[in-house]
Image 1 (cartoon, rainbow, N blue to C red):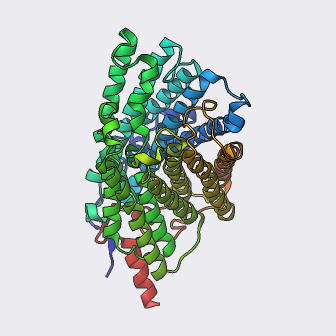
Image 2 (image 1 turned 135 degrees about the horizontal axis):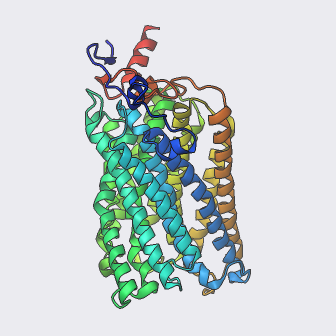
Image 3 (image 1 turned 180 degrees about the horizontal axis):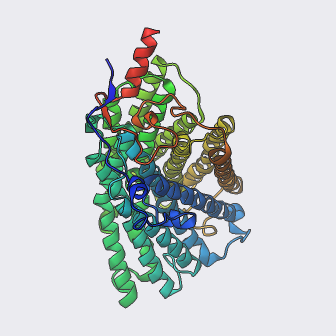
Length: 540
């Protein structure tokens, strides 16, 4: 019995390219080409690739910022690499930028390009809105970075640049919300016939969960930015002026809200682990539950400055911190069982997925200790360690997703051996960043200071190791960019199903044709390709 087929009577609606080809010479307009083609594109695959390319470029820049801050703390700040007034703003740039300029757009780019393929859809919902979201995000990010350079980040001394930062950051948030809305609407309304919500691939499901939480919580951040702008622009009396800005927006980049941004790491890992196990995903209901639970635990809009001090060390905060351990443990358990029953193939995306899962689990575990008042970890670099474990787990998962779906999008495949080594280097780099900060957190080193602390112990060595970790991870990302450019543009041609996949994107050509599929697929199983392949192996 076939588990995936097409309806004979179904016909595909004409695509934009088909209509252009059949238009009369008098009415036909020349199709845009070159740079203008990319600027005006509504092709979801191109929009996704633009997101990914820009996010990886920002990742390298922000890792360099992280390295400078770590080395500045060596020898109690006596190296004086950075100007004292710039340190606080660079910390702010690193935390905000890693989430809103790297992790969120990286996953959003992958989802924009891949989710319609996973669902059997011809395009993303509201393709022009998706394009608008990307360009708005890119412009907002550029202006936000420019505001920082003009001494206008939180705590900055240039009042006009501070106003510019607030406006630009608001544009970035709104753009990401618009892009998330397009992806969520695609999953909810454009699924192939027969694909119910419990049959969607795990990555698509994780994007729905993440988008839902962000659409509920980030409007609160937009409202706060409006209040902060009006107060700073016209009065500076209600919110502490430029110095108080950071305290009102920091909830958006720390746990629990941070979990909402990295939920897609669980979805990608589940899809990749199933593919490389070459076996049907075991306990899929537990994975669906884990991803949904991670989203619920990531709803951080309630963590506002007015009540933050009261809830940070409450029983509720402790319970949520312990609960955050369940999603990665459930996904790892299902993955281990799937691997045990399957015939694992160790490909580079698998190593990136496993590394991301382990870091996610470590970040969740680190959060368990924060609610304990006796440990006094709040405000120390221990918080930075948890942030890096979670946010950089998202970075590793995003890179793994690029390597996993890149052959489908470009039709070519980079060197898998070198990318496996880089996966190990990425895991090692994040570990080297976070572990010293965990130790220094117990030694009470402040998170946003490079000189106002005096502690006993190997402070210089630990901060130097953390700086080396940033440098190593930056080199790994640069290596991935170089190998991806070489492989996806000039590498050997990729097969339509290069990884022996399990979901609908692997049923179409590499790269996909206009409209993604020659015929609209109809599915009768949660994992149609796995069913077909297992049936074929049984016959053999």
